[in-house]
Length: 535
Ligand SMILES: Cc1cc2nc3c(=O)[nH]c(=O)nc-3n(C[C@H](O)[C@H](O)[C@H](O)COP(=O)(O)OP(=O)(O)OC[C@H]3O[C@@H](n4cnc5c(N)ncnc54)[C@H](O)[C@@H]3O)c2cc1C
Ligand SMILES: *[C@@H]1O[C@H](CO)[C@@H](O)[C@H](O)[C@H]1NC(C)=O
Ligand SMILES: *[C@@H]1O[C@H](CO)[C@@H](O)[C@H](O)[C@H]1NC(C)=O
Ligand SMILES: *[C@@H]1O[C@H](CO)[C@@H](O)[C@H](O)[C@H]1NC(C)=O
Ligand SMILES: *[C@@H]1O[C@H](CO)[C@@H](O)[C@H](O)[C@H]1NC(C)=O
Image 1: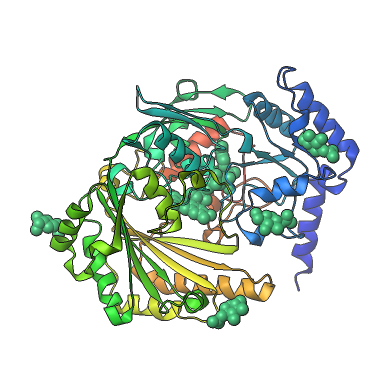
Image 2: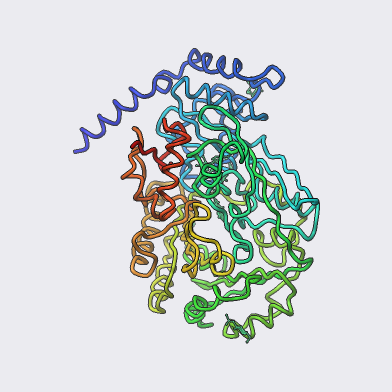
């Protein structure tokens, strides 16, 4: 039945992949020679390249894989991995990949939900920025330069080490990489006060498709706009970012409290939709719904709604705010803990009441690595109680290992930034964002299909209640279900605009304009890269 398409794919793969078809040492040698030739003698590249015959190739490849779906023998592997320690190595990788008709996948933290930073269906190499992770905090100007290979935890740690009144508004999970995260926006518990990570970037170093290095001034405002939320892997390799640090008080408060049906969880969630986006900007109050097999295993009610918050201020003030504005929740002091902001970044990832040493923020390996699938939605009008009830029922599924749904409140600073200020267009008018997540350990095709079907069904169920025309999605929650470019050939604008409008709204067209200007031959491309549009 599928004979013709399969044959076609096979032929196209072969014809476009001279190196792939014959991965001989000989071909590697040509490429390696090119790399050495294009690297200065003062910064030799030879000790930074891993070919498949090198015993470190697999461990290096595996080290930053964060989704087990893309970690099996069938997953396409890179011809080699380069781990640059100097910007010249990135330039050499680009020039030589172009000359050898290889694609580059750039990897910073490896958290891409679809594995696009380390998997491609064409002959490719990985430029892994793990060695480029220096961080320089400048307390004179309240700024920091951070290289893309650093993790958010490393950035938080270095800021906390320098000053207890400075902070940075980025993601919750400390192992996420700066490179991909800033490229796609980057939200965390301070988004209502300070916006996204990308909103706080003031300069950057980037290597373009010709191997040229630029800062903000030489790349120009169009390209500088595009890299702050337009998604990683389309415009070049961003080597480092200069960020504006933000002020936080000496004491912040984190709370977390569980509610189940007995506690009227559904009514509380319904009410939350009207309240959370209106609260004081210093207060973030989100909800995490957890169900399935996990709830049963952990001995919590299936499902459970966890209300969790970060307040930039003291516990007493927080209690007063919630008493006035959301008394139904019944949050009490014992649900909360006061700490420094830097401590709060650790608590956010390990849970309230655990006081691990801050050095845990420097650990690049998450506690568990499983197979996962994520999706996202934006909500502009409160969803009815009956719909929340419908979500609740779906979360009960016992054959699903870890189903979770995250509600991230907007409002505050998020509503003040215009839709076109950066490529991230989901601003005023959005009450909250939904993140759907499912993870599982069982490594079988059956298990994979079952879990992916579960999340797709929930997403389908939500259609009438979330943003429409287009149904918006978050670029950093990469989801190839919402559309992809042509896998093997050049990207078509029409095909790409399907997913592009969902991620970026009307900003998509400006991203296409910038892409066409800076990378007209579409060198930096992947299944959801910004397309080139020739007039
Ligand atoms: C456990 C977990 C928790 C998360 N929590 C949050 C959260 O709290 N908030 C949030 O906003 N998001 C969150 N995310 C999503 C995360 O922001 C994105 O997956 C982000 O793109 C990851 O960046 P990375 O560098 O780790 O990923 P990578 O997989 O390395 O890169 C992602 C994409 O960017 C490209 N890229 C990477 N580095 C560069 C570079 N230097 N220059 C140009 N392109 C580059 C890659 O090629 C790829 O296309 C989470 C993801 C996971 C897995
Ligand atoms: C593997 O590659 C690394 C990095 O290039 C190099 O230092 C090491 O010597 C190589 N090991 C082997 C066994 O070839
Ligand atoms: C890959 O890394 C994970 C943890 O990071 C580890 O559990 C797993 O065994 C590794 N797999 C291989 C093939 O090295
Ligand atoms: C919160 O409560 C205060 C004091 O009653 C009130 O002035 C404010 O309008 C309330 N805000 C919201 C979002 O309900
Ligand atoms: C949860 O799933 C695991 C792995 O699939 C299984 O071993 C376990 O028995 C399940 N637990 C429950 C309570 O269903």
